[in-house]
Length: 279
Length: 218
Image (cartoon, rainbow over the protein chains, first blue to last red):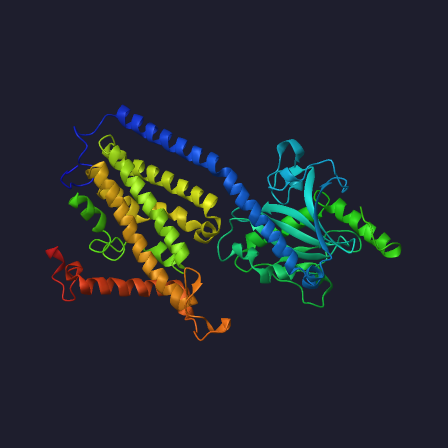
């Protein structure tokens, strides 16, 4: 073990090896490294998924706690959060589908259909048939639904949750659980101050057209558009556009549009008749 | 075994990669706001330098000179990715704070420097100890800088309040400067000065003089 210190690499005995030996060594090193990487990813995946799920639950709780008027609700104990599956195309509940596998945010190829590019504003490529949503009830009435949303940002696929009031049209809040946007710029989508801009924005207008969007220069507060527009993050135009497309896609006809429309009808009917029972 | 001990301890002070060779500075600035992230980063670098030195030394006679840097970087990148995966599995919170800086260990000059400069010319045992020592030397400086920054910037050590800040009802007004990256620069600079005042032999001869000789003299 007591070799004299020498300049780098000069210890290789017998001069430079031939091309074949060089190639053989390169492939051998790559093979060993690839095996090591594969093994570590496969073995560690379950732990990482468990961490991500925990984090996701924490974020949903944080999102719920930040919703306006939520402290009193939580304190009164009249708050119940339940997980359910809905069929996207019809907007109807699908109680026969297990929500567990839908929660990871991955799109299952067996439970999704390819999206043609012209309809794929969010860049998700496949449209799931079912989605797991959280429903928050207050005294039996549907207070808020929390919908999983995803879409392409500037650098990464962004995943998060959009909270919509029981009327199916008023945004209560938004949060992102997974993304790899530029720290300090696009990653500001995690900033609670920016997320707070979403509260009380309207998704559709009277005619039912999706109007909500992110703009770099929002209309003045008294303009009619102000109810639909959220100010983008300066320096992160692409990320802001991604968030805009994502929200518009998921509240539109290919996303949760039918479900939100059903909530709106039920809320209008419930308003007239009984205080309880949607679904 | 005295030589082994020497290989291990030399990089701690006498040949410290940060204070003497001024390597690995960017991560030292980025992750030293709090001690827990700094120590986890230090631990990751220790694991990577030790294992990469070991692996490079083990196959040093087989590595052709023409592709030696590629082979070394492949080994290092693999180890860093494994460490990153381990952190994401078992130290989720800290791994989120370290974010890209774990991946950037690949570009930390200390790792490749020791691999190419030492492990290519030394035995497996000495290389492993050298990697361990250099990683520890890096971790030591990171830990020291982070201790000062966390104590003065947040009034705590490893998250435990030591100086109770004013907004928590105490008397200590946290020095916000220590939460910002430049403070790590100042601290490392101070540390370099302190070590070189203590160990005069580390002081380098000036590379340039103001009254230079004519250009053709070079």
